[in-house]
Amino acid sequence: MPDPFERSEILLGSPAVADLRRRHVLIAGVGGVGGYVAENLARAGVGHITLVDHDVVSPSNINRQVVALHSTLDQPKVAVMAARIRDISPTCTVVARREFITADNAERILRESGTELVADCIDAIAWKAVLIQSAQQLGLEVFSSMGAGNRLDPRRVRIAKLNQTEKCPLAREVRALLRKNGASLDFLTVFSDETPRPTAPPEPVTGPQGRPKTVNGTISYMPALFGVMLSGMIIQFLLEAGESEKNI
Image (cartoon, rainbow, N blue to C red):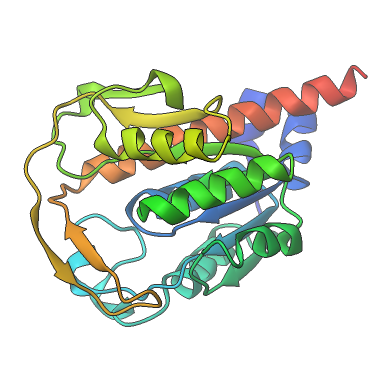
């Protein structure tokens, strides 16, 4: 069988591709952004991926989520994404955890996974902050997605550390929570500096926390763009880490 990573080896070289095979990334949230992060890490040849998400595929996901098809409705997102990753990269070790991250389990999930890096694609603000702080306490690198909803202009998507983001209400609230808890804001995020459009009124949702949820308007390409950019930052970090380890 031809090598599926042949084109990556042309660009990166065989040693770098081999190094990506031993790397482990945990993706928290396998929805609009997280699904594209998982897809691109798998296609880049990352060898160990842990997926964490409690949700199932619903009809409203179809306009933007890579896991969402009519044939996958009502299936756990982590299961759908894990099967997709195995089809893309059969040698990739994939762990699918259908869990809702909270203050009670975030550190345990991260420890048990054995991951070296966290891709934060959670949309629940309180638990997003909990995940980031837990990862920092364990000495794990964090890359985070801020709000892709209610935006339309792909030219306004940016990469910056959390304390340098602008016009993102989600980033503002996460900053406030992390500051309150003494956590660092010194990690990279993908965000949009487009002024967000109005949300729909909050509506109750069924879930582990029974929490009302603000309903954001979405367009197909914005979560995908966030996910692609986040995965690109992660791959670059892993490649640079591999080079640094060689020089020690």
